[in-house]
Image (cartoon, rainbow, N blue to C red; front, side, top):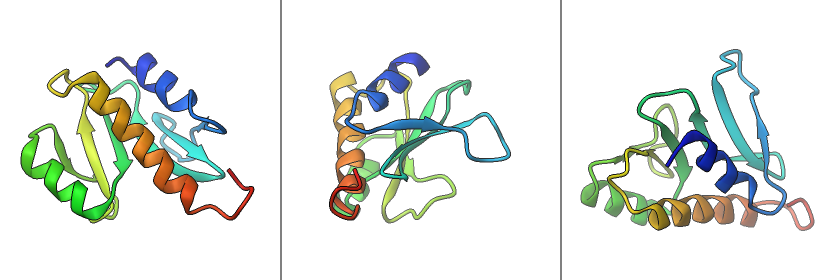
Length: 113
């Protein structure tokens, strides 16, 4: 998955926006209702994205796939960092993005998404 494909997948979700809120302008976040569901450096090589995940699933994914590790500089119980080096099926990555979005959107106050 390329940086453009990652951005397009995140922005295809209802209400998703792209921002660069940190001093380090290379860090791009994707938000819904003002809350982050994906964090990446689009210029990184290899490309990585951090995504929210149910804790039990997060642990299982890390044990199963070398490209999935605990979230870098994030709550490692709830976030995974995924290396987008084509070692994971594209649909799986898209599903993880959507799951992260859904977890964050579900935590928003009614009508905020």
